[in-house]
Length: 240
Image 1 (cartoon, rainbow, N blue to C red):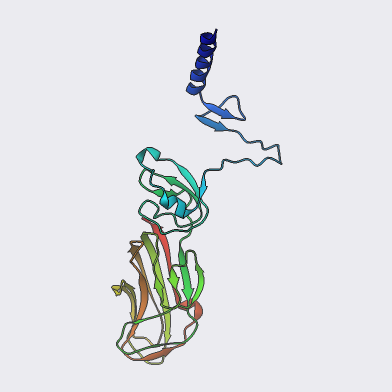
Image 2: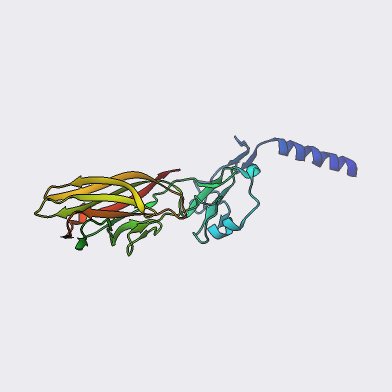
């Protein structure tokens, strides 16, 4: 009798194991089919994945190729990222691809800052221009004191900057992007009296040591009072 009961439960177990599993449905249409209860306004429908901090995810060492497809929800951005978690840069859902965690939904990563106060450009010197007023800075990667943008998310960024340099004389004016202390690219250069010079480029950052700042050059010393919407510095993440 005991053997018969064991055999019956074994058959039921194998049958259930071989079939799709349904929650709130008797006819599951996939390996796991979860139906909500939309008519029940008091019920909180939804599937909640593991909720952990970034520091807790960084500390985990058990993930490998067999765990591709794993999903977690990051609740805060504590901890210093490693290679596996380098793309964990905002609170939200992440999926593991077998080697690293990737966001399920890309969010805006970048900053925009302006300058409205006067500044001085020494003669024949590439001088860093600091943009001290932030419009936004999603991850606090831009330093309003030094004018340096240093993201911790590796990849390519679209960088734009401009400056109004109005003067009655015709001087050479150049705006440039400096990367890691060296000239990366220069933008417009003008001799005209009143100009707005600009520079735009795609820049790769390694997510650790790479940084950029904006410099201005003039062949004569100038004191400048900028226009707000003509003197700005922006960068935003576009991809790896």
